[in-house]
Length: 172
Image 1 (cartoon, one colour):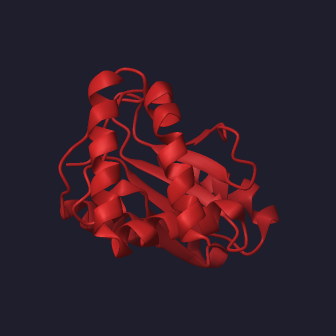
Image 2 (image 1 turned 90 degrees about the vertical axis):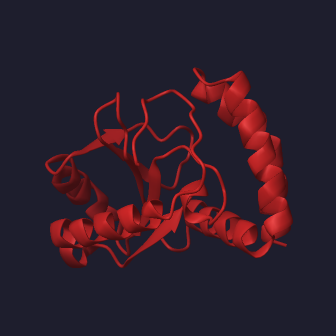
């Protein structure tokens, strides 16, 4: 199942349907945006087999021309996405799909050489390649979700040091 109320934290055990939801959304997005997007990446915890996650599928859409993003945002907004603030991530355009009470997808428009792209892919790949680190991260996520189920900002802030350590290890 995919979908979660905005601002909340509810972890689900890994579900292979998340991969299918990603693939289905990419097919839909390719129809909507055509050749304006170079490639897509499934990132975030739903992209790591075995990892519990908030049931919201994270996607990166890689663009060659950042000047195209305004046009892409218009097209995406007319097809069910909502343009959202960047949350201090300077090199992406962030959109959410689904109403606030049932967010299903997060889409970031990024350039391949952006920090956002490199970090998201490195983080995902590091967790996939190091099951022991993924299990440690899963434990932290479960603990924080139990403590901060109604406070997404606190949940995210309290796992940031661990995430930064994984990024340091992944990008060495």
